[in-house]
Amino acid sequence: MTRHKATTSARLAVALVLAFPLAIMAQVKVGVTLSTTGPAASLGIPERNTVALLPTEVAGQKIEYIILDDATDTTQAVKNTRKLITEDKVDVVVGTSVVPGSLAMIDVVSEAKVPMISVAASARIVAPMDEKRRWVFKTPQNDVLMASALADVMKKKGYKTLGFIGFADAYGDGWLAVMKDAAAKQGIALDTVEKYARNDTSVTGQVLKLIAAKPDAILIAGAGTPAALPQKELIARGYTGQIFQTHGAANNDVLRVCGKDCEGMILPAGPLLVAAQLPDTNVVKASALEYTQKYEKINGPGSISTFGGHMWDAGQLIVAAVPVALNTGAKPGTPEFRAALRDAIENIKNLAVSQGVFNMTPTDHSGFDERSRVMVKVENGKWVVQPNL
Image (tube, rainbow, N blue to C red; front, side):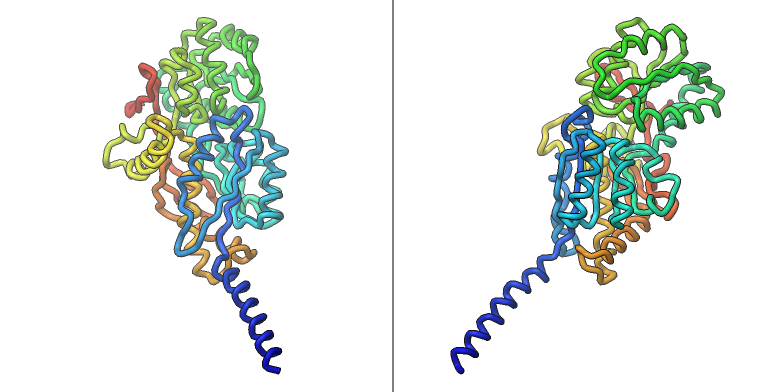
């Protein structure tokens, strides 16, 4: 009898030992899918590097990051998202680096009711708001916000005609739509349109057509190092008008690939790109410099990337939302916690990050205003803020 009691007690003790750690070790799981290989690798690599800088504990709760590479492939981005949700049981998904993949992920996360924070730019990721997009947020500036800034500069410079060459995908299509609208409002005609693929090695035909149309300026709607291809070809073919880029080209790797052919190009960028040049009164400067210092301490001077900044800002949204979600009493790993996390992100206000100040609302899951953009120009191989543009 004594032996039986002892055995029963021992088994009970083992059960408690096994169960108790499960109770105290429940952790928030963040699933990340990024384009760390393929045409968008210059976006995905700094984003992946940034994950290593994000906190692993918030409000006494452990945070685990699970990172997958989707190779800039939309199908793989969807597969990664399904795996992260069904197998890894993540509480939030971050990614992917590019617009087509992010758009395709919306159906997956909305069906599973898992919040998603995209690090791709198109406003179509979060708008128009509907039952699916209520689960989706994004950290890069909306292309609409950046397009209006470009159109303002074009008007100031007296340009009347604009040529366009952009990616033959959702990123380029989105930019074409918003730039046509922004240009029209300023009395600028956007008539000549060419497209190219992210992995193209030549755009000679498209560039020759653009030059033949003789526009006052040309906008290149590309992202990462592929944005350098039309820039270099336009210079090689003798185009002398103003070349503009989108914030997708706000990347030191673009300058490296483009070299002297990038000289003089103008684009709208997040404050992070030129944080040290901003006045101390700029509300974003301190947070942008904090990220810059942390990133460059690990990756070397001059390694900072606006794309990494989008990941940093996604991390700051999670850091701000986790304590609020925990306060509801919901436990990580449950549907209740994921819903609470979604609600918490949607209610974030006045959060200064590396690229702007977040003010989320039920109808705006980007949350940035004009404080998230500056105009920059490449001068002597460096990004220089242009306060008067």
